[in-house]
Image (spheres, rainbow, N blue to C red):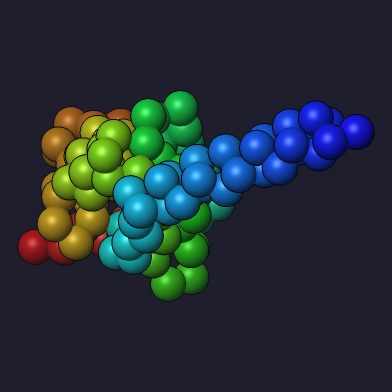
Amino acid sequence: MKKNLLFIFTAILLVSCSSDTDSKDKESAKFTVYGNCGMCKKTIESSLDGIDGVIEADWNVKTDEMTVSFNSEEITLDKIKEKIASVGYDSDSHRAKDEVYENLHSCCKYERPE
């Protein structure tokens, strides 16, 4: 019985130490990404699906605010914004290539900032 309790305690200790390490590198950021609709939301958020280091991404259609949680040891905020721009969406600091923007669906063509 004592061996089982020691094993359980050790396992809990390892899990909690692992969680502490992960949280040190976890960052959250909010920034503007321009878009119009639910289709934009799907494209913007899915541009970050499967990207190492991205934990969570949520774009608000009404406010154009992107909230992203990420592991700063694996990816930078700059790279995240580059990924979003690569699918046609401008952010507060990164501009999508004109030809990629022009290929967006007509309802997704937002008014681009200067």
